Length: 364
Image (cartoon, rainbow, N blue to C red; front, side, top):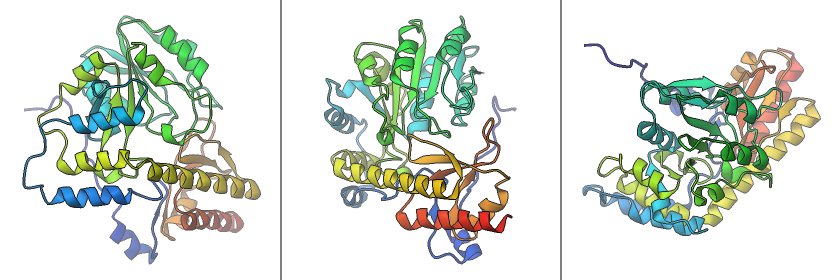
Protein backbone atom coordinates (compact mmCIF):
# COMPACT_ATOMS: atom_id res chain seq x y z
CA UNK A 1 0.00 0.00 0.00
CA UNK A 2 1.52 3.30 -1.14
CA UNK A 3 1.12 6.44 1.00
CA UNK A 4 -0.80 9.32 -0.53
CA UNK A 5 2.13 11.63 0.20
CA UNK A 6 5.65 10.58 1.06
CA UNK A 7 7.80 13.18 2.79
CA UNK A 8 11.11 12.41 4.52
CA UNK A 9 10.96 12.31 8.29
CA UNK A 10 12.57 15.28 10.00
CA UNK A 11 15.90 14.63 11.65
CA UNK A 12 17.52 16.26 14.66
CA UNK A 13 19.65 19.11 13.34
CA UNK A 14 21.39 20.24 16.51
CA UNK A 15 22.44 18.16 19.50
CA UNK A 16 23.91 20.57 22.02
CA UNK A 17 26.02 17.93 23.73
CA UNK A 18 27.53 16.90 20.39
CA UNK A 19 28.34 20.52 19.56
CA UNK A 20 30.05 21.05 22.92
CA UNK A 21 32.04 17.85 22.44
CA UNK A 22 33.09 18.79 18.90
CA UNK A 23 33.95 22.41 19.56
CA UNK A 24 34.99 22.50 23.21
CA UNK A 25 32.87 25.67 23.50
CA UNK A 26 31.36 26.25 26.93
CA UNK A 27 28.63 28.53 25.59
CA UNK A 28 26.54 27.69 22.52
CA UNK A 29 24.89 30.63 20.75
CA UNK A 30 22.01 29.46 18.54
CA UNK A 31 22.00 32.43 16.16
CA UNK A 32 20.31 30.50 13.37
CA UNK A 33 17.01 29.77 15.11
CA UNK A 34 15.26 33.11 15.72
CA UNK A 35 14.83 32.30 19.40
CA UNK A 36 14.34 34.67 22.30
CA UNK A 37 17.52 35.89 24.03
CA UNK A 38 15.96 35.86 27.52
CA UNK A 39 13.85 32.73 27.21
CA UNK A 40 10.57 32.35 29.13
CA UNK A 41 9.24 34.52 31.90
CA UNK A 42 9.94 33.22 35.42
CA UNK A 43 6.16 33.25 35.84
CA UNK A 44 5.92 30.77 32.97
CA UNK A 45 8.49 28.46 34.53
CA UNK A 46 6.63 28.58 37.84
CA UNK A 47 3.32 27.85 36.09
CA UNK A 48 4.84 24.86 34.29
CA UNK A 49 6.21 23.47 37.55
CA UNK A 50 2.80 23.76 39.16
CA UNK A 51 1.03 22.22 36.15
CA UNK A 52 3.55 19.37 36.00
CA UNK A 53 2.21 17.91 39.23
CA UNK A 54 -1.10 17.30 37.46
CA UNK A 55 0.08 15.71 34.23
CA UNK A 56 -1.31 12.37 35.36
CA UNK A 57 -4.73 13.87 34.64
CA UNK A 58 -6.14 14.86 31.27
CA UNK A 59 -6.11 18.59 30.58
CA UNK A 60 -9.32 20.53 29.97
CA UNK A 61 -11.03 19.42 26.78
CA UNK A 62 -10.91 22.96 25.42
CA UNK A 63 -8.75 26.06 25.63
CA UNK A 64 -11.39 28.57 26.73
CA UNK A 65 -9.40 30.16 29.56
CA UNK A 66 -6.34 30.70 27.38
CA UNK A 67 -8.43 32.27 24.62
CA UNK A 68 -10.18 34.55 27.11
CA UNK A 69 -6.82 35.80 28.36
CA UNK A 70 -5.76 36.34 24.74
CA UNK A 71 -8.86 38.48 24.19
CA UNK A 72 -8.12 40.51 27.34
CA UNK A 73 -4.49 40.97 26.25
CA UNK A 74 -5.30 42.17 22.73
CA UNK A 75 -8.41 44.18 23.66
CA UNK A 76 -9.95 46.23 20.81
CA UNK A 77 -13.27 44.41 21.13
CA UNK A 78 -11.80 40.99 20.35
CA UNK A 79 -13.45 38.07 22.14
CA UNK A 80 -12.39 34.49 22.82
CA UNK A 81 -14.30 33.53 19.67
CA UNK A 82 -11.81 35.54 17.58
CA UNK A 83 -8.99 33.13 18.55
CA UNK A 84 -7.99 29.53 18.02
CA UNK A 85 -4.91 27.88 19.49
CA UNK A 86 -2.46 25.50 17.89
CA UNK A 87 0.75 23.61 18.45
CA UNK A 88 3.00 26.32 16.95
CA UNK A 89 2.38 29.05 14.41
CA UNK A 90 3.14 26.42 11.77
CA UNK A 91 0.16 24.36 12.89
CA UNK A 92 -2.05 27.45 13.00
CA UNK A 93 -1.36 27.84 9.26
CA UNK A 94 -1.77 24.12 8.65
CA UNK A 95 -5.17 24.11 10.41
CA UNK A 96 -6.36 26.97 8.21
CA UNK A 97 -5.22 25.05 5.13
CA UNK A 98 -6.96 21.87 6.31
CA UNK A 99 -10.18 23.83 6.75
CA UNK A 100 -10.18 25.83 3.52
CA UNK A 101 -7.99 24.12 0.90
CA UNK A 102 -9.25 21.27 -1.27
CA UNK A 103 -7.59 19.16 -4.00
CA UNK A 104 -7.09 21.26 -7.09
CA UNK A 105 -7.13 24.59 -5.23
CA UNK A 106 -4.28 27.08 -5.49
CA UNK A 107 -2.56 29.09 -2.77
CA UNK A 108 -0.41 32.11 -3.63
CA UNK A 109 2.90 32.54 -1.82
CA UNK A 110 5.82 34.92 -2.34
CA UNK A 111 9.35 33.50 -2.31
CA UNK A 112 11.87 33.76 -0.81
CA UNK A 113 9.81 33.03 2.29
CA UNK A 114 9.27 30.40 4.97
CA UNK A 115 10.08 27.08 3.32
CA UNK A 116 7.17 24.93 4.55
CA UNK A 117 4.35 26.81 2.84
CA UNK A 118 4.36 24.63 -0.27
CA UNK A 119 4.23 21.47 1.86
CA UNK A 120 1.21 22.77 3.77
CA UNK A 121 -0.69 23.23 0.52
CA UNK A 122 0.48 19.95 -0.99
CA UNK A 123 -0.80 17.95 1.99
CA UNK A 124 -4.30 19.17 1.09
CA UNK A 125 -3.89 18.30 -2.59
CA UNK A 126 -3.53 21.98 -3.45
CA UNK A 127 -0.73 23.67 -5.35
CA UNK A 128 1.23 26.82 -4.63
CA UNK A 129 1.57 29.64 -7.11
CA UNK A 130 4.72 31.65 -6.51
CA UNK A 131 4.63 35.41 -6.99
CA UNK A 132 8.26 36.22 -6.12
CA UNK A 133 9.17 39.13 -3.90
CA UNK A 134 10.58 42.10 -5.75
CA UNK A 135 14.36 42.44 -5.85
CA UNK A 136 16.33 44.06 -4.27
CA UNK A 137 13.81 45.30 -1.68
CA UNK A 138 12.21 41.85 -1.14
CA UNK A 139 8.61 43.06 -0.87
CA UNK A 140 5.38 41.50 -2.17
CA UNK A 141 4.14 42.92 -5.47
CA UNK A 142 0.45 43.58 -4.86
CA UNK A 143 -0.44 44.12 -8.51
CA UNK A 144 1.22 40.85 -9.57
CA UNK A 145 -0.50 38.98 -6.71
CA UNK A 146 -3.88 40.30 -7.78
CA UNK A 147 -3.21 39.35 -11.41
CA UNK A 148 -2.28 35.82 -10.32
CA UNK A 149 -5.73 35.21 -8.81
CA UNK A 150 -7.97 32.93 -10.85
CA UNK A 151 -10.96 30.65 -10.32
CA UNK A 152 -8.74 28.08 -8.54
CA UNK A 153 -7.24 30.53 -6.04
CA UNK A 154 -8.48 29.78 -2.55
CA UNK A 155 -5.86 31.36 -0.28
CA UNK A 156 -2.95 33.80 -0.15
CA UNK A 157 -0.23 33.24 2.44
CA UNK A 158 2.03 36.17 3.29
CA UNK A 159 4.76 36.30 5.93
CA UNK A 160 5.02 39.85 7.29
CA UNK A 161 7.67 40.68 8.40
CA UNK A 162 9.05 38.08 6.09
CA UNK A 163 11.27 35.15 7.01
CA UNK A 164 14.11 34.98 5.91
CA UNK A 165 14.52 38.53 4.58
CA UNK A 166 13.21 40.48 7.59
CA UNK A 167 11.49 42.91 5.23
CA UNK A 168 8.00 44.34 5.82
CA UNK A 169 5.00 45.05 3.63
CA UNK A 170 3.57 48.47 4.52
CA UNK A 171 0.02 49.54 5.31
CA UNK A 172 -0.89 51.03 1.94
CA UNK A 173 0.05 47.86 0.02
CA UNK A 174 -1.59 45.56 2.56
CA UNK A 175 -4.80 47.60 2.62
CA UNK A 176 -4.92 47.67 -1.18
CA UNK A 177 -4.50 43.90 -1.31
CA UNK A 178 -7.27 43.31 1.23
CA UNK A 179 -9.62 45.76 -0.45
CA UNK A 180 -9.24 44.06 -3.84
CA UNK A 181 -9.50 40.41 -2.79
CA UNK A 182 -12.52 38.41 -3.95
CA UNK A 183 -14.86 37.35 -1.13
CA UNK A 184 -14.05 33.64 -1.54
CA UNK A 185 -10.29 33.98 -0.88
CA UNK A 186 -8.70 33.59 2.54
CA UNK A 187 -5.71 35.78 3.34
CA UNK A 188 -3.39 34.11 5.85
CA UNK A 189 -1.16 36.76 7.42
CA UNK A 190 1.80 35.00 9.03
CA UNK A 191 2.73 37.74 11.50
CA UNK A 192 4.73 35.71 14.01
CA UNK A 193 7.50 38.35 14.12
CA UNK A 194 5.11 41.26 14.67
CA UNK A 195 6.30 41.98 18.22
CA UNK A 196 9.70 43.07 16.89
CA UNK A 197 8.38 45.60 14.36
CA UNK A 198 9.32 49.22 15.01
CA UNK A 199 8.16 50.72 11.71
CA UNK A 200 4.93 52.69 12.35
CA UNK A 201 3.74 51.75 8.87
CA UNK A 202 3.15 48.13 9.92
CA UNK A 203 -0.31 47.04 8.72
CA UNK A 204 -3.18 46.96 11.21
CA UNK A 205 -4.43 43.45 10.43
CA UNK A 206 -6.82 43.37 13.39
CA UNK A 207 -8.61 46.41 11.96
CA UNK A 208 -9.50 44.38 8.89
CA UNK A 209 -10.51 41.34 10.95
CA UNK A 210 -12.89 43.46 13.03
CA UNK A 211 -14.30 44.83 9.77
CA UNK A 212 -15.24 41.26 8.79
CA UNK A 213 -12.54 40.55 6.22
CA UNK A 214 -11.52 36.94 5.49
CA UNK A 215 -8.13 37.09 7.19
CA UNK A 216 -6.36 34.75 9.59
CA UNK A 217 -3.56 36.42 11.55
CA UNK A 218 -0.95 33.91 12.72
CA UNK A 219 0.78 34.47 16.06
CA UNK A 220 3.11 32.40 18.24
CA UNK A 221 4.58 32.11 21.72
CA UNK A 222 7.88 30.86 20.23
CA UNK A 223 9.48 34.22 19.46
CA UNK A 224 8.98 37.23 21.74
CA UNK A 225 7.44 35.15 24.55
CA UNK A 226 10.44 32.79 24.57
CA UNK A 227 8.47 29.52 24.52
CA UNK A 228 9.87 27.91 21.37
CA UNK A 229 10.28 24.54 23.10
CA UNK A 230 6.55 24.30 23.89
CA UNK A 231 5.40 24.82 20.27
CA UNK A 232 2.40 26.93 21.28
CA UNK A 233 0.74 29.12 18.69
CA UNK A 234 -2.56 30.80 17.96
CA UNK A 235 -4.39 32.83 15.37
CA UNK A 236 -6.91 35.66 15.19
CA UNK A 237 -9.83 35.78 12.74
CA UNK A 238 -13.45 36.78 12.67
CA UNK A 239 -15.51 34.31 14.76
CA UNK A 240 -16.98 32.44 11.78
CA UNK A 241 -13.49 31.60 10.55
CA UNK A 242 -11.83 31.09 13.95
CA UNK A 243 -14.59 28.74 15.09
CA UNK A 244 -14.53 26.79 11.81
CA UNK A 245 -10.77 26.26 12.09
CA UNK A 246 -10.84 25.64 15.84
CA UNK A 247 -13.58 23.10 15.27
CA UNK A 248 -11.18 20.68 13.60
CA UNK A 249 -9.07 20.41 16.76
CA UNK A 250 -9.01 17.00 18.37
CA UNK A 251 -10.15 16.69 21.97
CA UNK A 252 -7.49 17.72 24.50
CA UNK A 253 -5.70 19.60 21.73
CA UNK A 254 -3.54 21.51 24.22
CA UNK A 255 -1.71 19.85 27.10
CA UNK A 256 -1.68 21.11 30.69
CA UNK A 257 1.75 22.66 30.40
CA UNK A 258 0.88 24.68 27.31
CA UNK A 259 -2.40 25.94 28.74
CA UNK A 260 -0.74 27.11 31.95
CA UNK A 261 2.36 28.50 30.24
CA UNK A 262 0.36 30.46 27.69
CA UNK A 263 -1.73 32.19 30.34
CA UNK A 264 1.34 33.00 32.45
CA UNK A 265 3.19 34.40 29.43
CA UNK A 266 0.30 36.64 28.43
CA UNK A 267 0.04 37.97 31.98
CA UNK A 268 3.72 39.00 31.98
CA UNK A 269 3.91 41.59 29.22
CA UNK A 270 6.88 43.22 30.95
CA UNK A 271 8.96 40.13 30.21
CA UNK A 272 7.85 40.16 26.59
CA UNK A 273 8.92 43.79 26.30
CA UNK A 274 12.28 42.96 27.88
CA UNK A 275 12.79 40.13 25.37
CA UNK A 276 11.95 42.44 22.48
CA UNK A 277 14.24 45.20 23.77
CA UNK A 278 17.19 42.82 24.13
CA UNK A 279 16.62 41.48 20.62
CA UNK A 280 16.39 44.96 19.10
CA UNK A 281 19.38 46.25 21.06
CA UNK A 282 21.37 43.26 19.83
CA UNK A 283 20.30 43.86 16.25
CA UNK A 284 21.40 47.51 16.35
CA UNK A 285 24.72 46.51 17.90
CA UNK A 286 25.26 44.09 15.00
CA UNK A 287 24.27 46.81 12.49
CA UNK A 288 26.84 49.20 13.98
CA UNK A 289 29.61 46.61 13.93
CA UNK A 290 28.84 45.51 10.36
CA UNK A 291 28.96 49.16 9.29
CA UNK A 292 32.39 49.39 10.93
CA UNK A 293 33.55 46.30 9.05
CA UNK A 294 31.98 47.53 5.78
CA UNK A 295 29.80 44.40 5.57
CA UNK A 296 26.39 44.74 3.95
CA UNK A 297 23.06 43.68 5.44
CA UNK A 298 19.33 44.00 4.90
CA UNK A 299 17.68 46.20 7.57
CA UNK A 300 15.16 44.01 9.35
CA UNK A 301 11.86 44.36 11.21
CA UNK A 302 12.42 41.06 13.02
CA UNK A 303 14.83 39.59 15.58
CA UNK A 304 17.16 38.41 12.79
CA UNK A 305 18.84 39.94 9.76
CA UNK A 306 20.45 38.97 6.49
CA UNK A 307 24.20 39.65 6.42
CA UNK A 308 25.71 39.93 2.94
CA UNK A 309 29.26 38.95 1.98
CA UNK A 310 31.37 39.18 -1.15
CA UNK A 311 32.50 35.55 -1.18
CA UNK A 312 31.07 32.11 -0.24
CA UNK A 313 30.25 31.78 3.44
CA UNK A 314 30.70 28.04 4.03
CA UNK A 315 34.07 28.54 5.70
CA UNK A 316 32.61 31.33 7.86
CA UNK A 317 29.77 29.08 9.00
CA UNK A 318 32.32 26.42 9.94
CA UNK A 319 34.63 28.92 11.67
CA UNK A 320 31.74 30.23 13.75
CA UNK A 321 30.57 26.70 14.52
CA UNK A 322 34.01 25.88 15.88
CA UNK A 323 33.43 28.63 18.45
CA UNK A 324 29.93 27.40 19.33
CA UNK A 325 28.12 30.01 17.21
CA UNK A 326 25.38 28.52 15.03
CA UNK A 327 24.29 30.48 11.95
CA UNK A 328 22.63 29.55 8.66
CA UNK A 329 23.65 30.23 5.07
CA UNK A 330 20.80 32.05 3.34
CA UNK A 331 21.38 32.68 -0.36
CA UNK A 332 18.86 35.08 -1.88
CA UNK A 333 18.23 36.34 -5.41
CA UNK A 334 21.00 38.83 -6.13
CA UNK A 335 22.63 38.02 -2.77
CA UNK A 336 24.20 34.57 -3.12
CA UNK A 337 26.68 34.82 -0.23
CA UNK A 338 24.62 35.60 2.84
CA UNK A 339 23.82 34.44 6.36
CA UNK A 340 20.58 34.73 8.31
CA UNK A 341 21.64 35.73 11.82
CA UNK A 342 19.38 35.91 14.87
CA UNK A 343 20.26 38.21 17.72
CA UNK A 344 21.09 36.62 21.06
CA UNK A 345 22.53 37.70 24.41
CA UNK A 346 25.19 40.45 24.23
CA UNK A 347 28.09 38.01 24.70
CA UNK A 348 26.87 35.96 21.75
CA UNK A 349 26.41 38.99 19.51
CA UNK A 350 29.95 40.09 20.36
CA UNK A 351 31.33 36.61 19.69
CA UNK A 352 29.62 36.58 16.30
CA UNK A 353 31.14 39.90 15.30
CA UNK A 354 34.58 38.80 16.51
CA UNK A 355 34.26 35.64 14.41
CA UNK A 356 33.25 37.59 11.31
CA UNK A 357 36.09 40.06 11.78
CA UNK A 358 38.64 37.25 12.13
CA UNK A 359 37.29 35.51 9.02
CA UNK A 360 37.47 38.72 7.00
CA UNK A 361 41.04 39.33 8.16
CA UNK A 362 42.11 35.78 7.29
CA UNK A 363 40.64 36.07 3.78
CA UNK A 364 39.59 32.42 3.92
